Image (cartoon, rainbow, N blue to C red; front, side):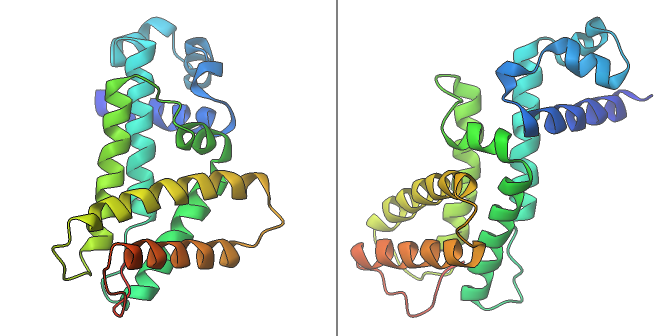
Amino acid sequence: MAVADRRAALLEIGLALFADRTPDEVRVEDVARAAGISTGLLYNYFGSKRQFHVAVVAAAYEQLRAATEPDPQLPPDERLRASLAGFLDHVRENATGWAWLLRGASGADAELVALGDTMRQTVIDRVLGDIPTAIPAARVAVRGWIGFIEAAAVSWLQQPAVGQDQVIDLMVAALHASLAAAEISTEEEPT
């Protein structure tokens, strides 16, 4: 198997294992066994368990970015709702791994923190892309809203009786309230 193909297959295995268990619960031997390779070969591709973990988290964020990519053909409010639905669908399908990650389990690992910050910056850019404003508080408002939707998603995973549409309504209302508090007009709803 080509190096790129083997790495991709190992990342898929890591994503599958992290979907059901936290990374600390996944042993290198578990990944190697699932891939039908030796642990030494896994280290050959990633160098260490931590490097494998970072690569899996990067792949997870890339999947999330793709799952939440807004359709530019939709009006702003529909783009926002579709992105939030993609976010909630994605985290529900990978509940354990995403709950762990959204709770900030990257801790003091600068590389994992940077991956999360990059994803959050993508969301900020998407939201502010539809708002013609130079108000400095806009980034603060949207970054705070992202913290809210991450916490709301974890809570929703634990309270399945709350419907997804209701959670999306709550998230949209929270964004509008945050933007209004920053004195940003929400006449044109953001994505």
